[in-house]
Image (cartoon, rainbow, N blue to C red):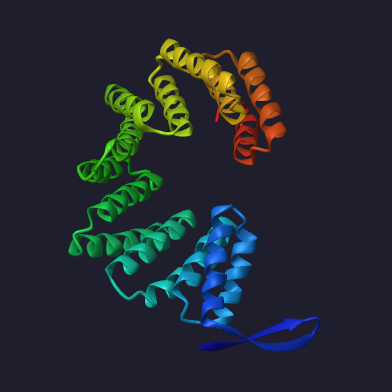
Length: 304
C-alpha cells in the first residue's frame, strides 16, 4: 500500500501520521463536494490537507484555487491555479487550469494577465479541436474587454463565440452577451433583438432561474432603450410567475428593477419605495448580493 506522510500542528505539538494515497484522493473529492455546496472555507481547509499529503495533487490545487476565489482571495487563487497548470498532463488539463486562472485574474481586475491566460487556453483548445472550450474562452475574452470598457471589442469576441454554440442553452447564453454589448454601444434595436432571442430560448430550454434572469435583463435593456411600457409589462408578467412559484429572490429582484424603472421615469419617491420593498425581502431571505446592490443604489441617491 502506498503511504504518504502527513504532519499537522495541534495545540502547539507536532503530530505525524500517515495517510494512504487513496485517502489523499478522498480529501480532494471532499474539497470538491464542499465547493459545490458553497462552503469555501471548508473546501480550502480540505484542499490544504490534501496538499500536505501530496504536493503533486493537481485536483487539490484546482479545488484550492476555486475555494480561495470564492472567499475573495483572488491572488491566492491565482497562485494555486498556476501550480495546478504546472501539473497538467495534457491539453484538457491545461485548458481547464488556464481558464480558471483567467477567471480569478479577471475577478482581481488584472485584465492583461486574464487576457493572456484566456488566449493561452484558447490556443490550446483550438490546437486540440475543442470547440466547447474555444467558445468559453472567446466569451471570457469578451468579458475582459467589456470590463475594460471596450464594448465593441467585447461584441467581436461574443459573436465569434456564438458561432460555436452547439445547442439552445449555449445560444441563449451567447445571445444575452451580444445583447448586453449592443446595449452598451447604444444600439438598442440590436440589443432588444438579441435579448428577445435569449429570452425565448431560456423559456423553451432553460431552468426557471435562467428564464427569470433573462426576463429581468430584457426589462433592463428596455429601460436603457427608454421603452418603459415594455419593461413594465415584462416585469409584471414575471412577478406573477415568481410569486405563484414562491421564488422570493426573484420577487425581490423584480422590485429592485421596478425601482430602476421608476428612477428612469423620474418618479424617485416610487423608486425608493420599490428599493425598500426589495431590501426588506432580500434581508428576510439573506440575499447578500442583492442587499449590497440595493445599498449601493440607495447610497447613490437611487440613480446608480
